[in-house]
Length: 185
Image (cartoon, rainbow, N blue to C red; front, side, top):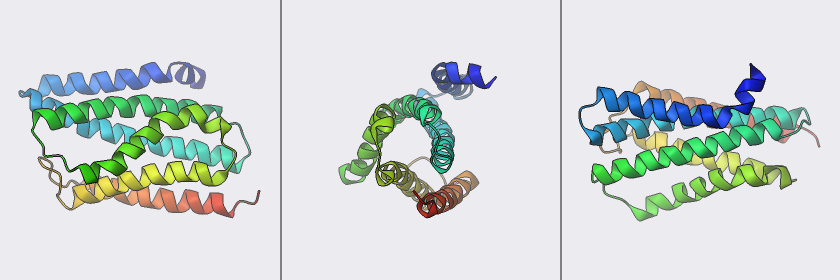
């Protein structure tokens, strides 16, 4: 089973995104809402994949193992997050959400990191660079969930999920980071 998932991870990630879109296409009467909900729930999928990637990296790091599985998971995360971006961009366009360029800069950098990092992960030898990737992307996600919790997202009221996601992100960043920093080289 693990081997099948590993071999078909990219296809499974894309299929999950397509299924998500098709679900909202069938239950929402307005295309604006289809993309709004597809973006929202695609982001939640991305959060789960990010946490899995961080867990895999942490495990490989603590046990001095290869980063091959982590690299594959990060590649899937990158593909799924690009799809999330497409849903998000189209939702913003359709729903005429005002864009604040200064707020986009940090997210843009995170997107670039998400797309590039899987290609270079095995070439990086410094723990600080790996941690910079995971913490920067995690920090951008935390800021997103803080904005959600504060009700600053147009068309999306705060939900219990946002509080849980925020708590889990902070907890995971603290625990995993502490474990890796304390590990002796």
